[in-house]
Image (cartoon, rainbow, N blue to C red):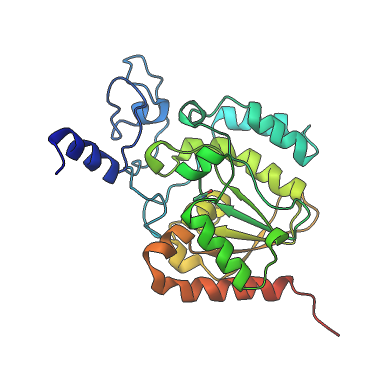
Length: 281
Ligand code: URA
């Protein structure tokens, strides 16, 4: 039989509150608090952003909700400028590992960048590390990652045929969704990551990944993953000579909760496999 304190702790865990971040509460409805992570009266004026989603137990369980455009701050622009002199994946990883500008790093155990072969044709981009990834320092190693690996293997992708990363490199506390400022700050890294990796195709997992990379385009704005999955979108960048075909699909965390959607995710993987398979003459 649980005592009262245990029951309160269990309730906190169930609603996603699994860490103590500050000694005083932070209001998620006050954007200044939410963006600074502090509750001081002198918090800087925050940019206007849409209301921040409340923490959920699983950060990818709502495929069409909480879609927010990235906020591109002056700091993000400064990062983008510095990244122009980074010309190898190894230097990029060193840069990300030593970058202290994202407040998520303060509460994370590890910086989580990538796993898989840098030579692979396929680059997979998810949302943000969860608790398992934060502990191990590698993306998609928890239950979502196991499902992703199993689906990739079943669709014919060899173990090292996919290079896996995320939109943000530090676990958001309580597995909440990364907010527009956090995404905006990590995006220059993600774009440089793609430009240096030069994959033949990109698979985006979940609405946050699609909105982060394509949210400024009319046909993507305000659309959830249900509307966007399965369609090819060209990723272009001034750092790339040619565009990269990109397909979006459901996030594996969503599939764990909604097995019926696996059929569509499976079709997306087969579509991707067909695109990467050279036509036999
Ligand atoms: N979900 C993600 O989006 N990325 C991970 O690395 C793990 C879970």
